[in-house]
Length: 197
Image (cartoon, rainbow, N blue to C red):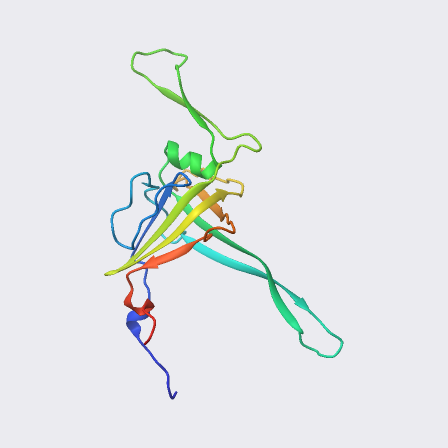
């Protein structure tokens, strides 16, 4: 095909992915490959094919009697979600998956010196908290970071407890927006993103 431009180096194969979470307002990374700033923590291991970023704009159409096609189409809203299944169970991951909550140390009923037990209580209605999120994708020398300043767990949590399979924590975050900042953005060192002269 005349004018067709093919470049196999522009195919992205996510050889490594990481998910970082932080408190809303935590300093975002300034570039695609530097160490993450203080305040971010990695959720650790995730299932092999579960990480997804979805961006879904919503549209309405104006129809007129004079045409079979819409006279005008306009965007009414935008939404984006992050989905991933966490394999590591710990305090921070539980709080992320359940949208907050509290963890307290409790005394075991049987006693025992030095033995510690912990109680996790999910947040009450209206008590869910937002978190900041960074999805990191690495393909050789190319790095991509999706920065999401505000997100919230907005789905139910179903954890399958099966004998012969690891029990994962389903993290399903809805991106939160605002008029004064980007709801999400991507930073990368991929030279293919340089605008043509």
